[in-house]
Amino acid sequence: MLKFDTLIIGSGLAGLSLALKLADRQKIAVITKKSLLDGASVWAQGGIAAVLSPEDSWEEHIKDTEIAGAGLCDSAATRFVVEHGKAAIDWLIQQNVPFSRDEDDNYHLTREGGHSHRRIIHAADATGLAVQQSLAAKVLAHPNITLLEQHIAIDLITGNKLGLCNNRCYGAYALNTLKDEIITIAANNTILATGGAGKVYLYTTNPDTATGDGVAMGWRAGCRVANMEFIQFHPTCLYHPHAKSFLISEAVRGEGGILKLPDGTRFMARHDPRGELAPRDVVARAIDFEMKTHGLDCVYLDISHQPEAFLQQHFPNIHARCLELGINIAKEPIPVVPAAHYTCGGLVVDLHGRTDVEQLYAIGETTYTGLHGANRLASNSLLECLVFAETASIDILAQNDGEFTTLPEWDESQVTDADEAVVISHNWAELRRFMWDYVGIVRTTKRLQRAQHRIQLLHEEINEYYNHFHVSADLLELRNLVLSADLIVQSALSRHESRGLHYSKDYPETLPQAIPSILVPPNYMTQPSHS
Image 1 (cartoon, rainbow, N blue to C red):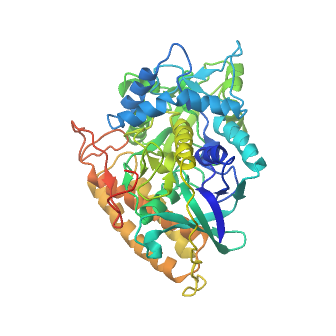
Image 2 (cartoon, rainbow, N blue to C red):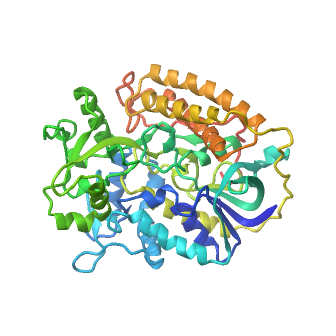
Image 3 (cartoon, helix red, strand yellow):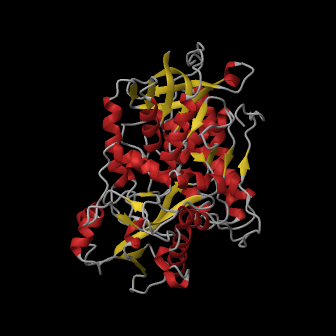
């Protein structure tokens, strides 16, 4: 049994930030499914939203966030995050993150959809990569941080599972995928920082690691889940047979990019007076509408009116990647389609990242903090990771260290080697296809019920497989994806209105009162100690 003061599951911005904030005073383990830089944070192009300009204000950032969130943002959480934005950026600057500067050597701020001001600090068009590389170097050099790569968490170890009369997390079981062995990790504090569930959909901008692991593990452990119906579809994913999940940053529209039909006609003005700078839910639905109306495979994003030198300076990676695929963005428009991008709901947490289970925290995309409401404002996601990593670290360091409980080893005495691995690959493909068709940008009750029926069949089949065979990474991810899909559909069926990212043809109106959709697991204990 391995023992640590704090176990962090996930190596994105939330997880690495928290590890660095704790490591001078604690022994930390960071486990990650693949390598250190394989999470969604690395893929973030646009930047981080924060009030950094004298022309901007907290009130304006809060207002923009709440407008995008379609009335469902928690006002206290939104204000809390926005007011801690500058401190979060200052901390990253201290970590030597190379943010882009303007001709006066000030930090360059760009603007994205839904923002009333330029407030996106960025590192060209690869902000996530720049941030993660800076933090990863410090994590690898820190003597108190143990990095366990190629390890996938199986499940949390809780008092309920140990037969104890409490609702506490004691650590987790994890599969070492290189050695095919399961280890037991005991920790005084466990943090779920595993990102979102974008891989539940056929088309997504997310990496292969985004399989809803944290939400699924938290739900099984007894945590409530909120607002899972709000899946953000990024409007502009590159449409090309050789481009897998390549995102065309929001900032391209922020710097003047225009959406067009194949014949060159602009269409956003017909859908929203803000045009290309409308929030993501509006733009994604507009593109979806135009594609279905005209029978199109894609629409086009045109930034060719900007000088090539400007494009190479502001969007070097997008410019280079498109050129590799034969698209010169300085001379021709970029073919784009919407794709699943961000999970706005997740595990219910407070302002310290505490879940309903004692000593279990969650931060980042895995969570529902109340910040994003019914639709996340562009570039608020990395900000949320940073702010809650800070508040969780403060809460963890204020505790008295508890005693380690001896945990039982993983029991594989009743299982055998799998005989039909095709079951996993088939079910994975089936799930992602019907989620795209039935639980996508535009929904109906009948489609949601069809998805729910199929999810139930998959759930039974996968649980039987899980109970009889040795676990594998593919099986664990599929198990978590099916549970995440179930939570998305349950949440969508419970919302009898259209709001933000959830658009139902059966309930096209928005109700006067905005209420989060909160799901309660069967093993939920009604009195969390920190409530």
